[in-house]
Image (cartoon, rainbow over all chains, first blue to last red; front, side, top):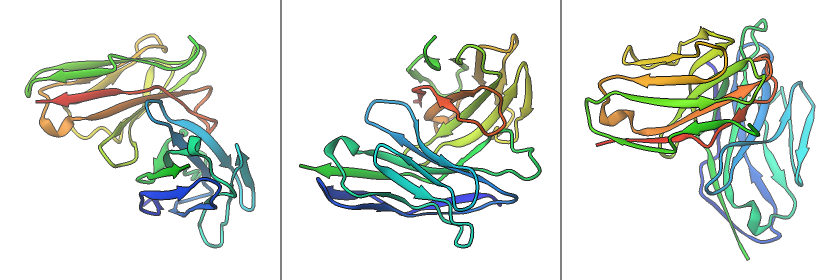
Length: 116
Length: 114
C-alpha cells in the first residue's frame, strides 16, 4: 500500500550545520510529494512540494528533489538556524488515475533541535 | 476567517462519553479533511468531504466515528462511546478543490479520554 518512511529522530544539530532528513515513499500512480513543518505550539504548515519527477521544491533555504528512480524526497538545508527547530513531516498524495482526493499520507515525523 | 479554525483546542472527557469536534475551514474551500495524530506519529487520514458529501470515509476506524458537513462549510467530527485509545490530536484541513493543491491545517483539537 501507499506509505512514507522518514529517518527516525530526534536530530540535534549546532547552528549553521548541514541538515539532511531522509524520506522514501511507496505509492501507486504518480504521487505529489510534500514536506510539512510543525513549529512548537503551531499547526502543520506546508514547507515545500514537488509534483513530478526531477522537480525541486524549495522554501526558506530548504530544498528537496523528487527522485522517482529511488522513490525519495530527502530534505536538505545548508545552514540551519535555531528557529528551524520543529517537527518535519514528509508526505505524499498518491495520484492513481486522479482519484486521490488530495488525501495526504504522512511519515512519522522527525524532531529537529538546533542549538546555538 | 484567515485560516482553519478548530474548537475546542483541548477536550478532556470520560470514557464512554460522546464528543463533538468542530472545524471551520477557510472560506470558499470546497475540500475538507480530518486527520488523527497520535503521540509521536504522523497524521493519519480519517475522512474527506467535497462540498457537503463525504467522498472518502475509508480512514474512520469504526462506527463510533462519524462526521458531517451539512452546509458545505463547517464540519463536525463526532465520536460516540469514547475509549482511552481515541486520545489523540484531531486535525482538520481544507483546500480549494481537493485535487492535490495545498492543504491548510488547523491547530488541532487535543482529545484526552480518561
